[in-house]
Length: 154
Image 1: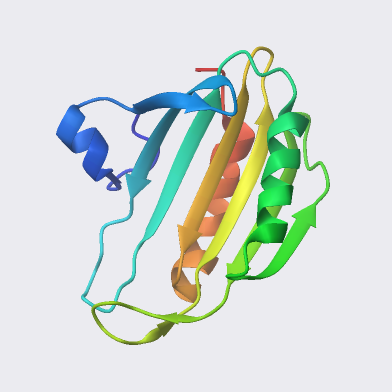
Image 2: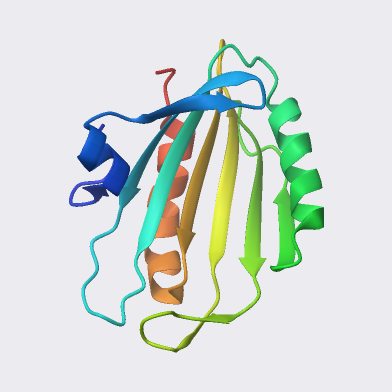
């Protein structure tokens, strides 16, 4: 899947030549991930992943468990939920994590993740965009939202 021109396959997809498949919360799940190429050593990069929960006809089951997990996660500094933004995108959440030091550069970084909960006819999809770079967040977030709104059943 060529979601975004120039973004690369995840390490696992490069290695195994197929998306990750496993059981998550009792559903067969398939996940594809793309990584934004880094422009410099200081560029922390970004990623987008799409996880399909086969035969999950209620995004609320997944969203409820996620929200409980977010409450337990002490590394999250804020959780902001949005209401339904379209027929398909039922909910979205922006997670902001507490600052930590980058292992290679030692610079302080704050991870932000936006996740969209998309309900298809047969399956539920989670689309997650993550980065520690504010410039990348501002530049790429509109493109990620387009992907969430245009997702077709896989």
